[in-house]
Image (cartoon, rainbow, N blue to C red; front, side, top):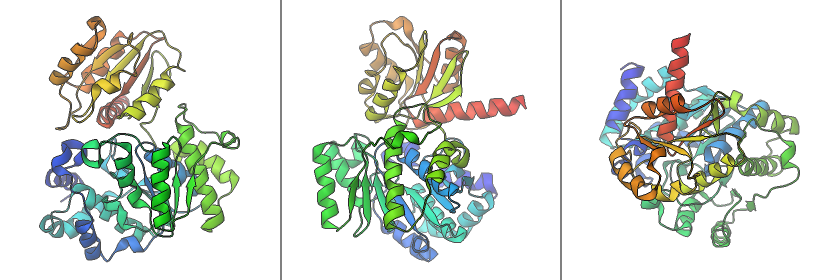
Length: 423
């Protein structure tokens, strides 16, 4: 198989949770343990940082990588989902995993993957572990896929574990309360391994993490905002990234003083300033167009995430707000919509995945929520919603695309193809 055929095989043979939901979700560590054993346990050949939590994982991973890259460490990243290119999930110093490597890995292990019914995410995890081993990375920063305790990535014993925050998401698999979700995410706390907890957690969740850390003799640190944090500038225009910056700076301080990984203040500053350049980070308060009109996309897709971007909207200056929104089935859309200004113009759409919240069902729900239907439009595709919003928006308006990673993904892919066409 060539690269295109290989990626097609992966998506067809190994259903992806982000696209199909629970029917492709395979919790547990048995299959990934067997696969990694088959590969020679590559996860034991590199040092790592494990990043879990509900929101902010991707931002934290990329900020850390950029800082450590500035210090000339070779850094591997494993994250999900991808937005444009499948290979975004596995990178080394910001460079995507090579197409040939992916093809060879699948060809060499295809029989095992099929026989053992390895899941999409398990295959990706094993691929990342093998790649980081062969690349001889100084450090791999591994993002949890879902939860933590039963997540495929939980095979590693990291130098540091990070739990960014806890809020309600994936309740159908992780539990319907913050405490139940926190217990699953606390599963990445390892014996004698330092764990850093992000800001904005409840007293009950804080207590749970303390108990879990005590059981495992894991030094625990809680991230707090300090006056020094703001001296490190970032390219992000969204205030919510300040929470992630605090976690990152706490992590760097622990690496410096407990883990013998030396990072200078200069590398911290340059790393944060250059995070987009160094890691190709995108999709978080991502400004696609500065004016005429201003266009922003953000992959916020749960209540906490939508709440944060709604607060950010209050700091933006615009005449009219145009919202392009699409969701996946499990989301409580009525709880998400309450955070947006009611006088906005809405362009509801459905992403091109099986797990989409259909535009038919969305129109029924929305009609019950909104009284003023003149500002509401429904579209069968993300592209049509986007083109309509662009056509209707004036130069001083703001267009925001959000509600689902997959809606943002389609917009970014459209922009990429559009500019390629111009060239």
